[in-house]
Image 1 (cartoon, chains in turn yellow, red):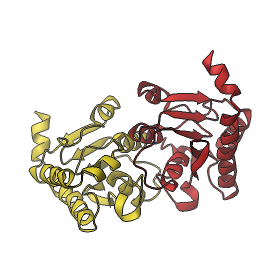
Image 2 (cartoon, helix red, strand yellow):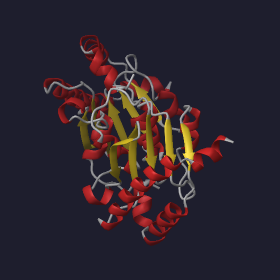
Image 3 (cartoon, chains in turn green, brown):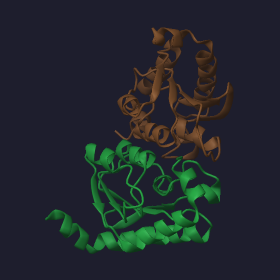
Image 4 (cartoon, each protein chain N blue to C red):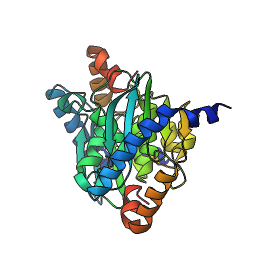
Length: 154
Length: 154
């Protein structure tokens, strides 16, 4: 079963830890704890975190900040995007637009919006379903419901 | 026929001219000529243009730049987004994510990617099909094929 093998692939967990570091850094800054990294050929080529609070940004979701910080790219072939949380429609749209073919998420229990859209567009999704990510996000949402609702414009 | 009435609505043309100004400003700066404004209650609340060249930005498509420049918003109720060109998946994802219910585009002949996605999510699309927008974009693509391919990651 492919999915099982994926869960066991240590690379996914190593890079997800880097996304989690970004999320925690965001939390320390007073922001929304969602982090992201982009990986190609075993190297991190971009990292980012949600910057709504820190930069008063409407569009700097973790994945968007990560994409932006990687700089201009002509091709995303071989790139895997990591995020501590399943991407929203904006970030999923960017993933499809830029032809990113694989996304690894820390969890999708607290938010799962982009999953079907990504699948429909042939993006491989690996959901690590990590307790650490689920607890971090659930705790944040419980303590900051208004900020969370603003971030997903609910 | 509703669509005909829309085409005749002078407000759409007045605000589209503002988006076209942004696109032309982008061209003068050496950038990709796509512009955008956001309107609420007859007032422009945000404006932007593609900043790939100007800011080395992967994510600052015109619509994203416009959204970002409007600052943090809790609700997009009553907001109409204008763009000189039909939005891509990233920008369409942002429109759906932020619950923007109406999009006015200058044209969709040179690029039409987001149309079906927007429609499926209940976004009203008004396509003005303006010669000015079509010619501006077609000329740019003809003269700068590599830059255009980079912008849509083809």
